[in-house]
Image (cartoon, rainbow, N blue to C red; front, side):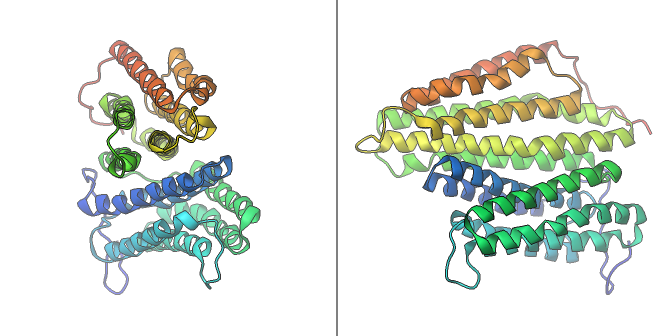
Length: 403
């Protein structure tokens, strides 16, 4: 690869794996995700849940391109590492101001504008490194040109929305996300991104999901660290652990390794398309679903420790976060399975949609009972999935890919 001022990017090999530097980068990203929970938990309403979704999408799709970048060149060496550190600083600033994302201030650069500028910097750094990497790679440069146009166009409504605030900010940031994601998706249809190391690609997405699950559990456990260890609160914390364990089991125990092996068996061209769809599309709602479940657990624990209790019922916000997040996670899991394994059973679809039917029931239950119902439901889904997996063809070590 040609360098700039004698500095050359280091391309990755097909056997490349996730580096410690990338895991460090991802920790900063997941910290930002947990700050979205802080934002939604501060004043939990239907509006803040929707605004939280916008923030989660902004963060996830500012991180995602760095996974593709790390699959092309080593991000822990030379100029690529310096650029990644700049992007990491931008994500960290975004995380710090996230709880005030819709609060206008007298400062020249208030929280909404700081967040918008941090997002722009993170994306601009990624585009700059990719243009550098693609200097002697015409096919990659063609992909990048298609990809860069909607990314840059989306910056305008993002910054204008931050300046206007209020409803205009919500609307314009929604437009920015639609332009960014929709444009990138259309671009990928005509110019798919290359995947040089499938091991790195699958491992990186899986590591971020498991870190998100762990950080979600820590966030959900924030209540018990600051409260008297009452029986109900401790039971609620344990139910939160059971819920998170089920989320881990449903993805990592069988599905993740089976998906990787199935993709490795595909011809190279087909493998790129399937990997891009399975991980690029399905993992975002997996993470978002886990974040909403963490918010719901935190809301339940808050209600269990309130004196006097705010309500005898879990309420719509906690129930929506718990059961809506579970439905999103399970549906995203099926999308991932459909892309990677090409099979989804009708019973799995029913199980994924069932939390939406349980939502009104959970809303009317006491907080601890609502969380217990979700935990029992996820245990049953995990058991059902184990039965489905036993009927699936056994996958051995991946054979060499066909050309």
